[in-house]
Length: 450
Image 1 (cartoon, helix red, strand yellow):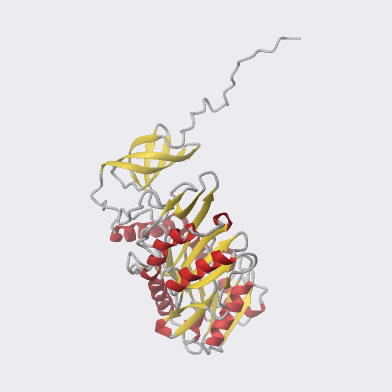
Image 2 (cartoon, rainbow, N blue to C red):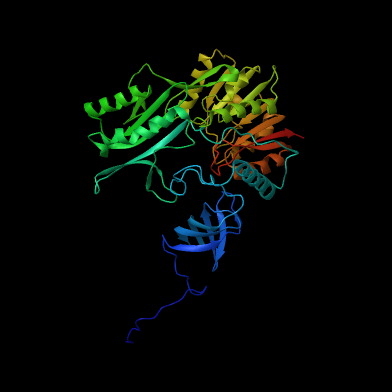
């Protein structure tokens, strides 16, 4: 029997494998251009680097956050040669907090970046350009966020409670005493929250905290074990001082400590009040949300005798203003609790020409009973996955006009391909600056039947 040979190393057929770059390594890079998500792109030794906080033309020192294959993710540590576009970061936590990744760009440049991202997706994926580009829909670049989730974690080894926002590229928590994008009513709560949580006797029972600002201010605590009477008293006193509701989320659904309290927000131009509960989806930017609804109605141009379909209706954010202008609104949502909440919102606002249905909107609409009568116009506001199955059957509903509100230009472009196949043309498109200081792009598109 042959003696085994030890110590041999066999290479894969593709040649030698490059050594992986360790997390934390620092590298000097020249940034060539910006990626669609606002990160700088650099090329070095056959690898592509995506660098948070870098701009085209800059020379930077970047710290590796992670690497896989030929792709390296990193963040800017130092800028040796700055772009003329760079501005000082408005937030003291820039570069550590993972929230606002493009705040080193002036706001007008942020809008231009988002416009390019949308145009590139429509051109590259769908091969189309709108007949008309709409001006960006934007509002104040700071003090806009009316909802925030605060991370809370008990470090048993260090016996410390960490409170803040998630760090860029990791699960670390960055202590935050002030957040420039939060609405003003939430700022004092945010600054005093860590000290209050430190006083609780069972910090290991804490999950996270959510802050809300609407028709009322609210604080929600996610907890993994029941609160002691003393801890509950501390929390109640904190909320009373800030004139905020207290909601607790243990097992089951979130509940207000005072059962008579309710949350909501107003759509002032339409004199509407919409109720919601923590966990429901609401747009975090109130000003841009109102402008978005107004623009959607303007583009859709609903007539008094028309029947209109609202898909992915949520709480009724579009359906209720639409109902003030048309004969009937049929609104459809995938989450049953949201359907019930939207129907309650319609009733509380004395709108009786709306019908709400629950349906799986990842499936075709052809068998839905509510779809058989057809519609003059359709509005849809899907999640990031888009609405591919829905748009495949939209032409069969007879709608001549369609407004598509998107939170992901890639899936909007994909769905545009299908709409063009059905005979719709892209009449108008533009970005919605729902999240200033981030590279997140929302968009609106108007399609008309040819």
